[in-house]
Image (cartoon, rainbow, N blue to C red):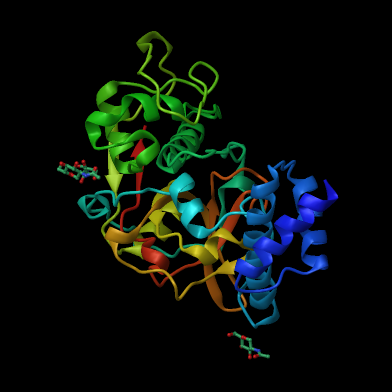
Length: 326
Ligand SMILES: *[C@@H]1O[C@H](CO)[C@@H](O)[C@H](O)[C@H]1NC(C)=O
Ligand SMILES: *[C@@H]1O[C@H](CO)[C@@H](O)[C@H](O)[C@H]1NC(C)=O
Ligand SMILES: *[C@@H]1O[C@H](CO)[C@@H](O)[C@H](O)[C@H]1NC(C)=O
C-alpha cells in the first residue's frame, strides 16, 4: 500500500507543471473529510493536483485588494471545464429572444431591499446537483416568491416538472432553458405542481404532470427590456424578486463572500450560461450590488447566496430578466 502510493505520487509529480507539497496534501485531506469525498488511488492524485491548483488561485486572489473573496467549496477538486459540463448550460440559450418592455415606475426607489427580510417570501436555497437545470430553480424561486407575496403562502414548487415537461417552450432539461420560457410553459400548461408532489431528481425523466395537483399558476410573463438594469431594480423594489441569467466564468466557481465583479466574463446574451434569482439589492463601500439566490446548496457562497455588482450589466446579467404575474 505504502509502496504503490509512493509510486503514484512520483508519476504524478513528474507529469505536473508544479510541485504538490506535503502541506497541500494535508489541506486536500481535510477538505476531503469535510466534503465526504472518496477516490480511487489514481483519482486521488489527479484530484489532489486540481485541488492544489485551485487553492493556489484562491490564496493568490485573496492576497490582492478585491471586492470579493474566494474560498474552498464543494467544487474545489474540479477544473472549470468539468464544472461547466456538469453545472452550466452546454449550449447558448435564446436569451436575446426575451426582449420585453417593462415600464419602470420612475418614482424614488429605496436604497436597500431584501425580500428575505420583508416576510416569509423566499424558500430555502436548493441544490440543482450535476444537471444544467439552474433555469428551473430560478423559475420556481421566482414563482414561489411572487405567489407568496400575493397569497401569503410560501410553498416550494417543482423543478422536476420543468425539467421533464417544458421542452415545447425551447427548454432542454439538464442542458439548459430560460426562466422566461419556463414561465410561458407554466402559463400555457395551466399550472405547476409542488416540490413534494413532483420531487427533484437531477436527471431527465418522462413528464408525469398531474393537472389535479397544480399548485401555482402564471397569468402573464413580464420580460424586462434587454439591458435595462434600472428596470430590474424597479421591479425588485416595487413588485417582487426577478429571475435573470448571466455568464459564469472560472473565478465565480470559487466565490466565497463580498461583491463579485469580473473582467473574465462577457456582457452579451449569447454568453450567459446560468440562471438565478435577484431577491434584493444594496450598496457596500460605494459599490452597488444585487443579492442573489443561487441553486448550488446552502454551503456555497454566503449561505447559498452571492452579491454581484449592480449597474454595469455585469456578466450580462441584464440581458434577459423576467418574472411572472400570478
Ligand atoms: C483597494 O481598492 C479600493 C476600491 O477599489 C480602493 O479604494 C483602495 O484604495 C484600494 N486599497 C489599496 C491598499 O490598494
Ligand atoms: C418573453 O420571453 C419569452 C421567451 O423568450 C417569449 O416567448 C415571450 O413572448 C416574451 N413575452 C413578452 C410579453 O415579450
Ligand atoms: C431558439 O429559438 C429557436 C426558434 O424558436 C429554436 O428553434 C431553437 O431551438 C432555440 N434554441 C434553444 C437553445 O432553445
